[in-house]
Image 1 (cartoon, helix red, strand yellow):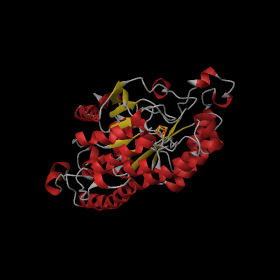
Image 2: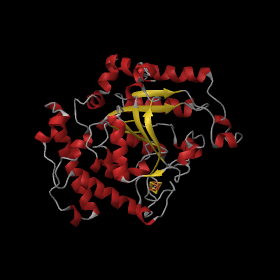
Image 3: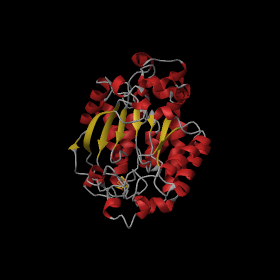
Image 4: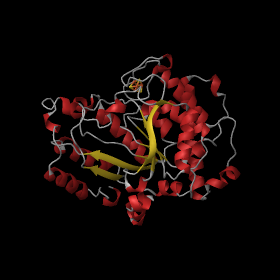
Length: 372
Ligand code: SF4
């Protein structure tokens, strides 16, 4: 059925460059390699993590992360298939995943899941800039046909709430209303993800709103999952460094939005500080740890300040990334309410702006038409 809806989801794999750049994702998707989270669950932690301070837990985490990288390298080299994983690595009493769960549950008690670093105790019902307590709500989940060709059908899970306040948000009904959606436990989230994979999803696509604010529930859900499936992180990439460290051993493919080329535009249009430093740092980590497709939504009148600097940064720092330059911007949310205040983006893109964005991307060797 989906071959008819999106024939490019098949033909895209004939593009050798796409296949090379997404080789890890492709092998996990086709069950030729175990997903990273399955290995994380099998890496043993011998220390008593209940008896350690927060700093000691992080030191241990970083040490075991190196060990994980070594073990994962062996599994890749020896081409261990997912079904043979149990023969190769037994399930430990306390795993690297348990250590990550322990750390994230400490982090939300003085919340630093993203770079707002609000330090509120979300477990006690306090709310920071994202407006969320510790509950996780899912607005919807389904096989998404509109994502990039290598990803569809994508098992997409839409979480509510967001750390950004983009004035042009097209998902404002779930990003600005954290209470919209069904309350999910880690067990329920694992069941949703498993069902999406069994029914044909190529990946589990954590998105929103934004998924970063729900890291505690998402990481805990992996305890209840055993199915082989690439995990995909589809976020604004404003996560804290600590969240990035928890995620980098777990995520098989990143799908970040790189929106702005400078901090002024980010502050005015998404109400966040230090955008470029945070988001470029996280892109650097992501590019060095897993496959990646970077999205850039072209905004009208923002070619020189945003599109061109973002594309140049990617070409220099993430040359192996696939890039989706998106031209479908339309005014929405507060831009529709206050068109005078946001005059620069109160219209659709002109054809010359679209042409210029693609021209720059092509000059930099970034655009892969089969993925868009
Ligand atoms: S997730 Fe980010 S915005 Fe939300 S409370 Fe934590 S640090 Fe603040």
